[in-house]
Image: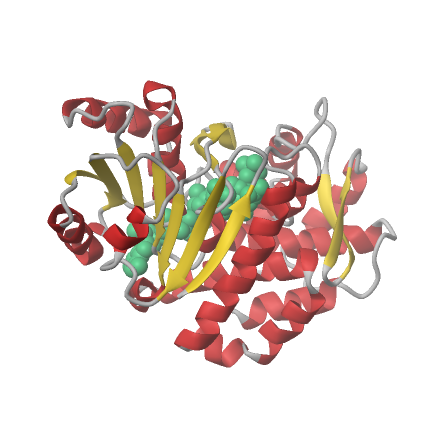
Length: 365
Ligand SMILES: NC(=O)c1ccc[n+]([C@@H]2O[C@H](COP(=O)([O-])OP(=O)(O)OC[C@H]3O[C@@H](n4cnc5c(N)ncnc54)[C@H](O)[C@@H]3O)[C@@H](O)[C@H]2O)c1
Ligand SMILES: O=C(O)C(=O)C[C@@H](O)[C@H](O)[C@H](O)COP(=O)(O)O
Ligand SMILES: [Zn+2]
């Protein structure tokens, strides 16, 4: 088992990464620096429940916890205010009080939505993340929780740090190939923003990673989580530095929202967005020779690097102006300086963004 720590001004919590950890959950919960909640509600989704819910409930019940559960429909459209309202109803019916805890068992959708419930239920109760997708190595760490709005991605949310993150890497064995690839998009993001040696490592180990080699996967997750934890520890509420974790997300989130959260899964949209950001950085003269390598790496993990939906430039730009990084509707991007290093750039000219969108629409160059 590998243990990393997130340490912010207000809290500290461990990220446990390893094999067989769901069975050891009661022991890991005992090590948390909190008053242990007696009553727990495990939130999961319709794909994950038949695979892992029983094992989690059994191990917790055996250890003396009162455990209930609530299963939401799988998929991004469950990240909605109405779903949180339903979950809150269930939490009330199950008798959760301020000393109870919410456990999110699943990918980023479950983590973000259940985390928002934990942040707001009785004004905030304990919360544990049990990620089961590769992408959720990112979403389970850092405390950004929330839901989407038809007009914008993650528009309603909170910062609510988990008390514990337990990543049982065995759960990735059942994860479909498309979801694995989407998870690699966020791993690639972490490498591109912070660590060129990690980029080279991903290039060299691509075959083993795509074949789900357990040792390589555990290392990729640990390196990704380490970067995320380090950034969040320095800037918990995104007053500056943390925005670098949004690399590829200005275009990515706009693509998700404009296509009704149904066309691209998050990692795919971010993959296209990172290619766009790399091209934009070159167009603005901030970086040289980054887009080719970025595109090749992303493609090698079987992720998309273009989208005909990029043709909807007006709608995409409207969405980008509503992005949370935006100041008074200006276009704000995280752009590369070189491989492994990025900067936050405000007031990016719309013409340059339009040029990149037209290249993303189909052309490879
Ligand atoms: N809060 C953050 O910091 C943060 C960071 C990155 C992404 N996100 C959010 O995370 C969401 C995407 O997360 P995701 O990619 O994990 O999507 P997801 O939660 O929808 O999971 C992907 C799919 O895989 C299924 N699944 C999950 N675990 C499985 C397993 N072990 N075996 C088989 N199937 C499994 C799910 O049911 C779903 O169908 C987006 O909403 C994104 O905005 C949040
Ligand atoms: O943790 C962060 O900060 C991130 O930006 C991580 C992103 O991968 C993630 O998609 C996050 O949910 C985006 O946040 P938002 O503030 O742009 O909604
Ligand atoms: Zn993301």
